[in-house]
Each structure stands twice: as C-alpha cells, then as structure tokens.
Image 1: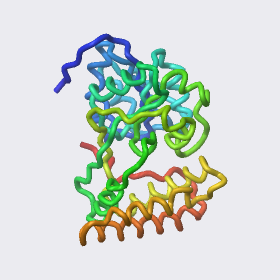
Image 2: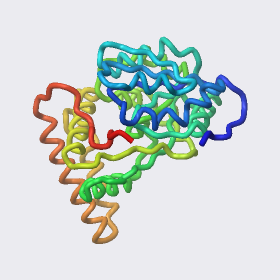
Image 3: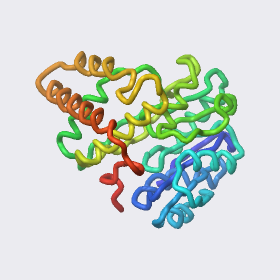
Image 4: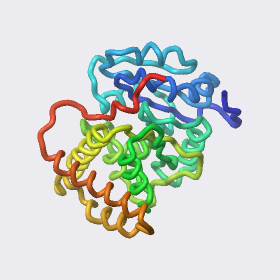
Length: 283
C-alpha cells in the first residue's frame, strides 16, 4: 500500500548500500520507490560486490536509481552514492532496515531546519522468529536509556555541512559510529517519527557474529580504547540498573553472557565480513 504524502518535492536523498541483499532489498525499497518516483526524494541503491539478484530486484522498484560496483565495500558504496545523489540532506539506510517514506521525510525535514547537522529516526527491534536467548539479549538492550546517538539503528542522515566534517566515508567497519563521533550532542537529534524496524538475528551464532563485528568496529573508531570499547562497563551497569524482576534479570544475564562472548571472540583475527544471514531469508 502506497503512503499518502504531502508537501514539496526534492527534499533530500536516500542512499542504500547493498551487498547480496536479494532476500530483503524489495521489502526495504517498496515503501520508498513510489515517493521517489514522485520526486519527494532521490533513491540511490549502490550494489557493491553482489553475486546475487540484488541489483535486478532493485531495478524493478520505480524511482530507484541502481549503481553497481564490483568491489564489496560499504564505505565505497556510500561514497559512490554521494557522487550520484544531488540533493541534501541525505539519509543513509542499511538495506535490511525497514522505514516508511513518511519517517524518511520527517528526518530530512528536521535537518532542513538547520539547527542540527545529523539525525535519525527512533527504532524498534523485530524479534519475530528469533531464538529465546536472542530475544532476551535484545529485550535487555532496549531497556538501556541512551543519549541521542546515530549508531545502532541502521539509518542516519546528514546535512551537507555535517557531511563536510569528514568529506568521504573512511574504510572502517562501523560507519555509523564514525559519523556519530563527528558531532557534539547538541548537533544531532533523534526525530519524533515512526520508528525504523531493525530485524534481530534469528539464532545465537548470527547474533555473536554481528556483536563481534560491532566490537571490531568500535576498536577501529576508538583505537585508544581497544576492542572492549569505552562504554562497556557503563553499559553493563545500565543494564543491571534496569532489572525490575525475575524476567528482566534473566534477560540481563543473557545480555552480559553474549557481551562477554563477543568481547572474547573479537580478539581473534577474522578474515571477511561477519554479518547476520539468519534474518535475510527470501520472502
């Protein structure tokens, strides 16, 4: 069902880097294609290193401009997307994140006001089909009260002035963490709009894979801190303070166990890109 939108057109751009996302790319793009075709925003999909049908599926979406790169590199895809897009502000969206066109426009419009340089929508976790221990981890995680940050939602947006803080995306694992650290708290905002939907991994192996990758990304962005990250203790304390009964206590134990396992696993040298494949099934 196409959303009913109003207001002026050419309000910004959406850039979607995609690596072998045939199982989810249609779900992500379908809500955004018609508004893009109507001119509300540009929609640029950068398929990088794909060996599946991601590009072919994306090209079937009206309004989507699809670019293909031989190299499998998210930073390269983001930079190419910036070269192709012409409008500002720009929203950078992971290919497995669901967001409505109305939420996209709310974020772009918030940045157009000019009082902040970076923003994102709120987000919620979709636990559907996940292992009970994975659900426990994410229930504990979502209880943590965080200051406004750009990372973790799979979507963030920048003004042209905000983007000029770094010029181009560096070759780092955690682009969202890198971008977040370019701005002071009063320069970024979480917009009051419909939340984006983050699909959790379905199984323990996949959860550990993305947690290890996250820790390596933190170590890259904060080299003086190390793979454990600078906020590990503070986060653990925040989770413990959120306990309010037996169920939340069990969730907290699962959270801490996964965090410790990921911390240990991140110390091992890994070849290749670790990601969750369990939630990327066709359909």
